[in-house]
Image 1 (cartoon, rainbow, N blue to C red):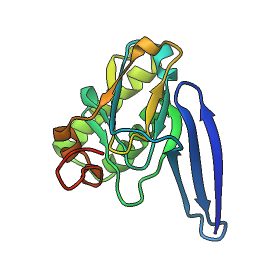
Image 2 (cartoon, one colour):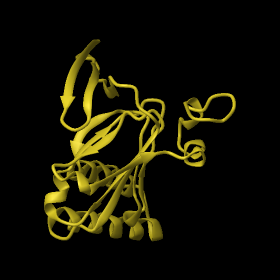
Image 3 (cartoon, rainbow, N blue to C red):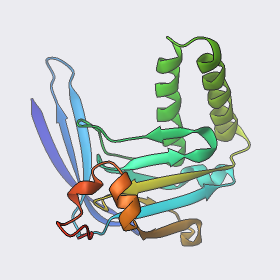
Length: 179
């Protein structure tokens, strides 16, 4: 098994460390992104209204939750959740791939709903994007980067949001206040 750590300076975000672990023998692979700067629990979002917006950079750590409300899509972190750096289009591709896998064993209304969601995503990638991408990260290791900074809304997660987001309990101290 081989582990590499590479430091990147992401414009308008700061220094990050990308950890990548791979095994040549079995094909195992795991990556994660960590900010090298201390950050607060964060919510960042952007409204995608043009094909150019699909190029907005997405930095997602292994502790982040990504939501696209218009599609009913949520990527939640698990014990082996990976971090990545991509763009909005890349996030859509990841969601579509997961959806395609899930639909392979779906039927009835679930299949119908999933196919509708997949068509919406494909249309958004090809011609008419109109959706919101939201990232909630209790450790602040995620972000969105755009040449037009007015496209990105950013704020600290509220205590209530932090309690509800996966891994948020690790950011609250014993009095329930975020660190």
